[in-house]
Image (cartoon, rainbow, N blue to C red; front, side):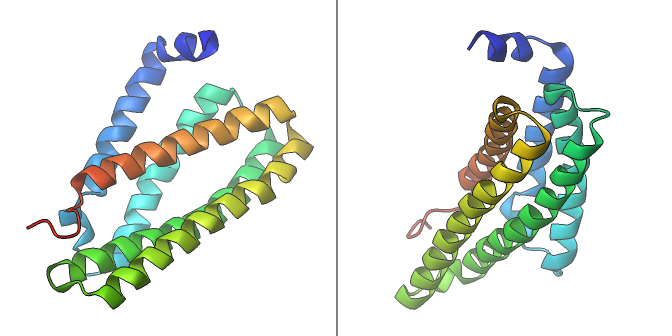
Length: 168
């Protein structure tokens, strides 16, 4: 708790956090997700977030020169991006079908999100071991905590902008 407060009080961390959340809110809004080419939009989102996220992790973890960490991180991010791409496509599918959503569509979308959540948990489990080989278990826990915080912040911003089923 004390360390978290120390980090939060640093101006650069706060600026980066606010900037990250604003970008997430804009880029993950339903209007943005309705774009003609969802794959192009996802690539744009992931490119913008990739640079911001790396800078945030570099600042928080202090790994500006740890090549081994960044090698594992890059591999992790590539796999995570593929999973997030699937989640965004599922959300886009939900938005496209929202006005005429039926039981079968709702069930398919729900199962897709459940599979995606399980895949993200499996990814964390897989990379937990790999990160432990290049950084300490405490640092691995800090990284996964930060990564989960970032993802949950983005998902919350997105969830707040999505209509609920049955909402008109």
